[in-house]
Amino acid sequence: MGLFRPYQRTDAADTSDTSVADEQEIKQTGRKTAPTPTRREAELARRERVRPTLTKKERKVRERELKREREDRAYEQAEKRPERVLLRNFIDARWTFGEFVWPILLLSFAIFIAGSFFPQLVTWATYAMWAVIVLILLEATFLWQKFRRLLDQRLPGAYRKGLVMYMVSRTITPRRFRRPGTAIDRGAEY
Image (cartoon, rainbow, N blue to C red; front, side, top):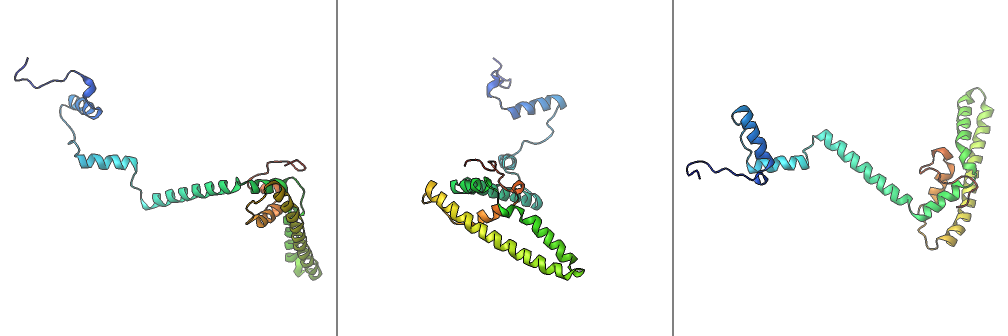
């Protein structure tokens, strides 16, 4: 028993990783290179690792990412509602006039641009645009009446707010650009 020797521990389980690293550093260099951090400094360093301090630019990027994630979650929740799923399948299972509106409107705009050379064409293009709008409204009315009966039959008491505009926007969007994408083919049972 060494009465004047420093106490040496024999079990290595009680030593922490930082003290082992410090001891190895002392053995390699022969002396300690940095002072041991105070408790406050150690806690601040740990907090920084857990929740780092961000610059203004990094904070804006992070907030933008969080906002996008929240919006995506809200969008997915809204799109999972059974009445919306039924409406999507109802529209996607059929051919609609509204799918072909965008090419017709682009042609009308081209005629408007060329209208300075052919004024009579501008008049006809205006009539064509009004006819397209009337046809879209008639089709939307017909489809809504049909869908409302189906909705009452399959999901009585379903929440209907916003379904008409959702149906119209889904109807006039070309099939390949619809979001969420089409889940069924045309003519399929839904």
